[in-house]
Length: 262
Image (cartoon, rainbow, N blue to C red; front, side, top):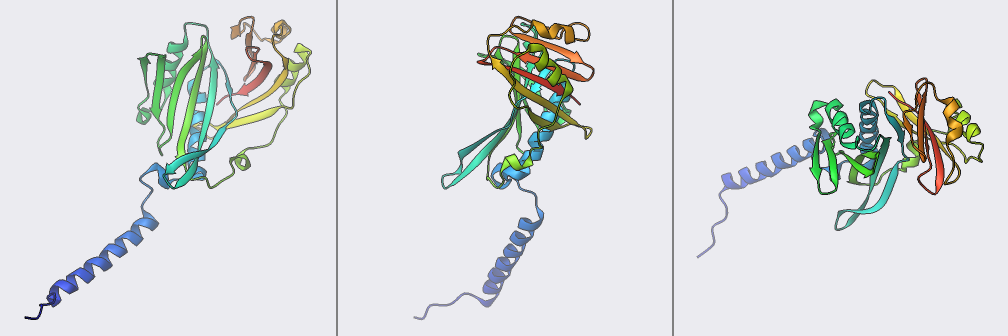
C-alpha cells in the first residue's frame, strides 16, 4: 500500500512558519539589544566601566582617594571554545581605621537607586555590592585597616579592542610636582588614570613613584592647606584646592598621587 505524503496545507504552513522564523531572527539580530553578557564586547563594556568608576569617585565625598591603573586580564573563558578578557577598574580610598564600613555605607547611599547598592557583613568584613547595568558589577571591600577598594568589573567579554588605545596621554600636575619636590626623592615618570563623572566632567589621578619605602612623609606637611585628610607614619593625604594629594609608603615603593574629583 503506498505511503501517503503530507497534506498540501500542512506543507504550506510549515514553509510559512520557517520563513516567518527566519524573518524574526534577522530582525532580532539587527534591532534587539544584546541580552547576555557574552554578546557584549570589551569595547562596549569599557565606557560602562569607566562611567561606573566616575560614579564611585563622586560618591566618595571628600575623602582621600586615588584611581588605580585599569586591569585588563586576558584568557578567561566565555564558552568552552572561546577566550575573552576582563576589564576591572579600582578606586582606592583611605580612611581612619574603624571607618571602613561607614565609608562603604555612605558610598552605597550615594549611588543611583537602580544600582540596588547595599553593604553586607560577611566573614571577611563588610562588602558593598551593586549593579551598574550592562552586566557591569560594582564591589567594595576592606583590603587592610583604613583602606577600602571600590571596583567596577566587566566580567569576561569578547576581546575586540586594545584597551590601552582608549587611555589618554600623560599630563603635568603641579600639586604632584610640588609633593615630589617636598619629599626630595627621585621620582618615576608620572602616569594618569581618568574616569567619566556623572555630569560629563572627568575625574583623574596622576601618580608617580618616589623611591623605595620606608620613607619619612613629614616634608609634605607644610603643603597642606589646613588639616590633613589622613596623617599616619606611612600614609599622608592633604588637599590643595580641588586636588587631593596622597602619599603612600606602605608598599615597596613610595607612591604619590594627585587626584581631582567630580
